[in-house]
Image 1: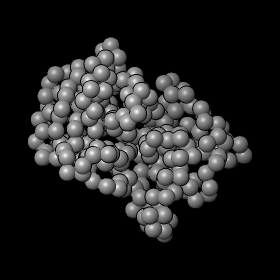
Image 2: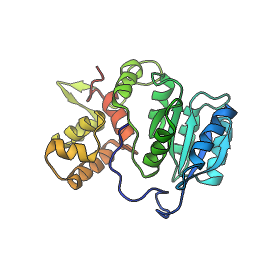
Image 3: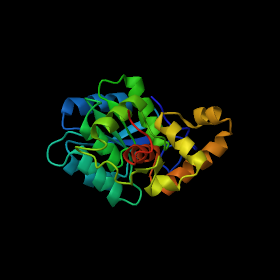
Image 4: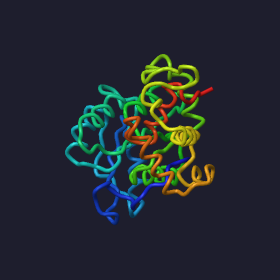
Length: 246
């Protein structure tokens, strides 16, 4: 599990760092929702504030409750997790952080959910401690990336199927065009290391610079790519051909 080095405490972006992270669970299987609730509510800094059985329920529920994190199943009847993610990310001024919870890691639905704005994904078979740590990472603004899995997803779906490969431009003489082409050489290095799953501290060590410098570069990369977070930046890097999944 790899996440970026976040700044600030765990909790809502504009809220108190001491307040528990508010979580909504969206899954069509009642037993799965019950299991996730037990795991999350057992932690003093996390609390489940609502549950939904499908995407049609989760969208109005999230707008009403304003949770910090949504655990989103991608395969649900009616409105699936991909569509629900699109509606929340595109329709709210301050959308929650969305963590996709899935049975299969090599699933085009997962890749589409990441493209739609999910901050990361986790397998339903993950251990309880992995699940709560993932919620904490997502809540504080980090992204949850599994480099090998994301590379495999990009290789399978980044240029065909569920995803629209090359939407940000193509490679021209080895130089990516579109938003990625506006990055400086150093920012490009940082983006490639982000795609490899390195956090800010690891990137700083690799480039022999300070973490503050890396944080500045990451912020610039996100701004130039129009990316909401590191996950979206990495997806753009793959789809533009700037980073090759093979």
